[in-house]
Length: 414
Image 1 (cartoon, one colour):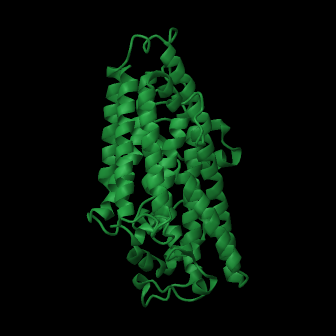
Image 2 (cartoon, rainbow, N blue to C red):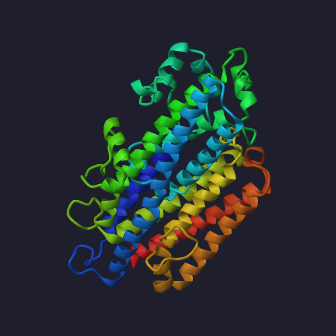
Image 3 (cartoon, rainbow, N blue to C red):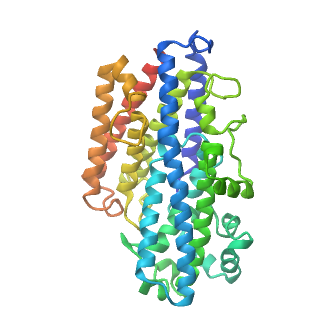
């Protein structure tokens, strides 16, 4: 599970960064009519980053989770009709992997709506409490309410089963086992996980649960999309978010998160300086996810602090999750969803004003991705928490994290 102290740490980091924004403010920062050359570059790269990294990734996440929900509901209905096939389950697994990748690639910008509205822990908490889930699915009244998708079942999923059962990992448990797609024959039998022993939980009950959780997941991803894109998000997504009565504008302000960042230093934006924006992107964003991957996602299990702290244990795709997390950093630094550096990007900015630092940062970013690529090709992390691959990846990501913080310090001070 993403422990409470992690979110407290993120809040502390963001408070620290906010304080730094004010302390590092230059004369030009306070004069919006006379931006310096560097500030104009920061303004341009911020607009590029928001429009070409954050917007497309959150749009993809919203679309993929919508597709996931619809496919699971269809599978539930086909199961009841006796027409479900392995192809139906395989399609669900493929869409799940695509949605999961989009989510993990968004984790270098968890600051903002994902943190402000508690969306991150709501949709991505682990480990799954299988004992509690077994008890919940044994209760007919809970299953009946989860099945009532048109009468609040989705919105009330948290109340019915608890937040620890929600999100990606609740669905993952239903559709994957031992690193493979769940089979139709397994769903047609009785759940054989040890936590479910003696409870006779059926595949129909599991698909009812998965559909309700997928609806809740979709709604929260719609909230992320609308919170950042605002009126640029599809009308159907905006209508659903309004129906759910979700918050979508910046805490303490009236702007959507994308506009709030792009309009930094202007009236109405909570971001006072362009150097402050750089600190948010690099420290609250990129450094935060590097620290979480190395120190928590890998470190908790590798160092023996919590052997059950394994992300994605049922699909056994932990290293893919971690690779997507660092890919999120790559996209952020490059200003686009590509391995190529956009001319309006943080990496291009560093190449122009501090090339040795840019080269060092690029080298350490490549090394982290290479270490994770090696790990992906080896044994799944759920079976491999003490291996040399886990240690090499953890060390490379920690080294990258240090370089990111050095870059942030230099940019905000110069």
